[in-house]
Amino acid sequence: MSTEKKRKILIFDTTLRDGEQCPGASMRLREKIEIAKQLARLKVDVIEAGFPVASPDDFRSVRTVAEEIKGPVICDLSRCTTKDIERCAEAVAPAGKPRIHTFLATSKIHREFKLKKDKAEIVKMAVSGVTLARKLCADVEFSAEDASRTEPEFLAEVVRAVIDAGALTVNIPDTVGYGVPTQFGDLISYLLENTPNIGQVVLNVHCHNDLGLAVANSLEAVRRGAGGVECTINGLGERAGNCALEELVMALRTRHDVYNVETGIDARELFKTSRLVSRLTGMVVQRNKAIVGANSFAHEAGIHQDGILKERTTYEIMRPEDVGIEGSELVLGKHSGRHAVRERLGRMGFKLTDEELDRAYQRFVDLADKKKVIYDDDILAIARDEMDDASGVYEMDYLHVATGTATVPTATLRLRKSGKIIQDAACGDGPVDAALKSIDRITGMQGRLMEYAIQAVTVGQDAMGEVSIRVAFGDDTVNARAASTDIVKASAMAYLNCVNRVLVLRDPGRKKGR
Image (cartoon, rainbow, N blue to C red; front, side):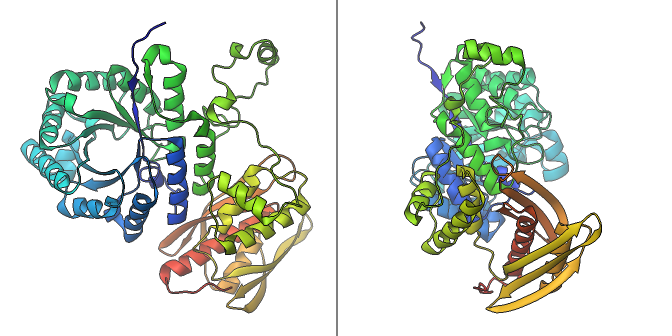
């Protein structure tokens, strides 16, 4: 047995920054904090919390993560400009271990068409950005955007210059997912061999999945000597997404004979983290997704089942419990009290206010009267709904729908606003369409449904359905989710949440209608 010490690969999680750039995956502050807490329990080395200069909300979320999350390095992103870097420094200052991550494009196509700068100007800008960042923060990372399409000789020149300027981490991104494993691995080897001072820094990689190669490229980079990987939970991110953290970690762990490295990740938290991110972003994890998909450890073929019964390793290279899959269990009954509900939510990483807990408990009691079995995911869906801090201008008081093959679908809806009850009805192509049109009639808001998805929260014919929607109101587009055993009700609740969000967005001074 080899006694050679394993290299540690640092895991840099950018779910809160790059992952949120995935269309439809935007998160509010409360949701970002819950995810950041779970990432800390997962024991990632670095959390990239956002892009502070993008908006006041982004700045506030980075600042709050920096204040509340202990353990990982807390990092934020900036362009190589004074305004961006100073904003980053201010946002991340409260962190126990703060980092400024600044980036600049280096490839020929970006130099010519986006930046309109020559090579000398690019080097000067990169050095200037890193120098300023080091004056404001002891830990600075530099990313060479579109590195995989940059001339290797010039990339090495830029890397050498930013290391001399004080960068402690240098990131080599495959920004558009253009690389293939052998080529990307060759680039990492070239930099390690041709940048004299590269031993002074951690060499990270950040691979996108446009060709479905993000994990493969990251693994090859590790094999060639990279010291850190930037990734996201469930592979969320721009376009086709990023390297999936759970896939990378388990590949390194399962094939330790090939890579001989280790991470500090607590793999038993992977499934829980995946599920939390999926619920809070509304981005459904496909059933056949590696590591955390519902089918990952399912065996239907008879020959496979026979082999598993005789010896698990015949068809399983990992155990479900290795990634925290232990099956959904009955956790509470209708006779459970508020304290039990609060305790269970706390174990899942949620901390609700007393008012939110009261509403969540009442929904739990109502659900317990309808369902024979209540799972963790049922509780999770309820908690997520009650965390919705943008809703409350309008509240649903009553919904009745009539539908069938020989009748016109009709919805009668009653909403409460500032104590006043407003009722109306509408017809539609189906019960959901009728319910949404009723909301439009009462609120005077005309929404255009851009995306609509239903996902069963748990299993069984009595499972709650979680509806995720994206709605455009003029120039404003918002997302929302809601869960219920009645999918028409869940659809109406999600749509009403969108109406409330856009009203609050347009007039932040609005008070809740309770």
